Length: 319
Ligand code: MTE
Image (cartoon, rainbow, N blue to C red; front, top):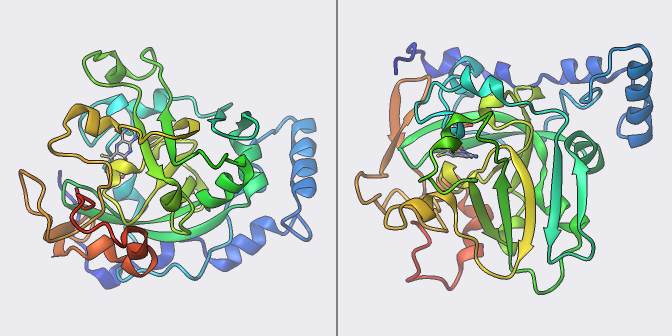
């Protein structure tokens, strides 16, 4: 894969949503933030025959508390270099992923909750409220990107779902549709893609349910219309195109763990000092820049997440 080499200072944060653009596009909703106002704007558009289910949602306001130590990776790079095995094992799956129909899309929330529910993805976004966050994204394959995601904290969804005290983990599942996704016709792979986190991880402020990138609804290749991003963990934990979120008592077995438990574990926290069985994790290729740089413990998010693993020394939390 070839990338145009740029210097860091040539890529300002221009791909994130500028405040002015955010204000302009939202000006039509006086006193933005009201679900009722957004819903009536949606109804008005429907009446005009221009119904857009995401009307009024994008771009979302940037949460300034999430800053980066490096420039944003251009959209032209991140949208064309993806892992989405449902559509093939190459990085160039963006064209194939266009077969996915991300709307209408409903998400089931079930398991150990007061009352299971099924909710439309854009209604969920309106209910939760969207924000933009700039996050680092580190793949277990030793490359990294920085992306302006739009989404809402997973902890808000957890609160909304009202889990029972017996719920110890959150399990996520991707759609299953071999007609649309040729990768899923390979029946020896453990489809559908599944991932899981502990309740403590799910309610950490960094855990983000992602619905958009670069100020727009998610393009299919990123895992439209709803994916997870856990920036302190290797990217395979950040499951795409989620249809089901279940609160469970037992630790879920992830897709990669089911495929190759000797190489991919449940915790998968980033640590430069703990190598993958077949390669070092000490450094990462920063995509779009052409540089390698040292990988940071917890991908640089230790201050926010290290306490989650206090007392777990000796367990394979970096694997
Ligand atoms: N989710 C599903 N459903 N299918 C996948 O193949 N790949 C994972 C993760 N989520 C994957 C997935 C891996 S290995 C990585 S590194 C990230 O998605 C890649 O996300 P990106 O393509 O947006 O960079």
